[in-house]
Image 1 (cartoon, helix red, strand yellow):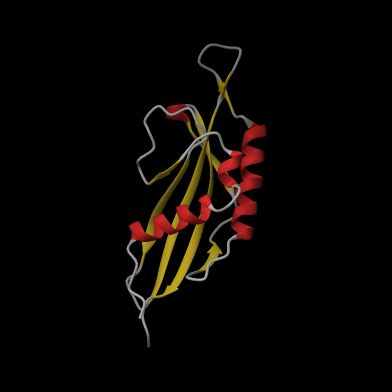
Image 2: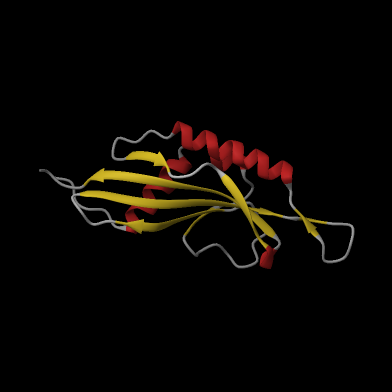
Length: 140
C-alpha cells in the first residue's frame, strides 16, 4: 500500500525529474525548493514549489516550475531589457522537459502552456509551467 505524499515529497520528486532531464544543462544556475533561492541571485535558477494539493485517496498536486532569467542592462541608466534570446531558449527547453516527462508513480499533465512574466523588483523575468500530478495513494 502506497503512503500519501506531502507537498515536500512532491517537490523532491519533481526536482528528481528535472535532475534526470537535460533542463539543468540549459540554465546557468541551480535548482531550489520554494522560497530558498538566494536573494540577489543573478543566475538562471530553477525554483520548484507546490501551490495546491489534496489528501484524498487520489492525490492531486499543482507544482510550479519557474526559471528566472536576468534582464540585460540597457544603454540608459536604470533601464533593463528582456533577454528574449534566453527566454526563448529556456522556454523551448522547459517545453521539451514537460513533453518528455515519464513517471511510474504519477500521471503528469501540463496545466498551462509554458509562458513567461516579469519580476520588475529584481530586474528579471521568469519562464513558468504548472504541472498537475495525480497519484493513487493507497489500495482500494
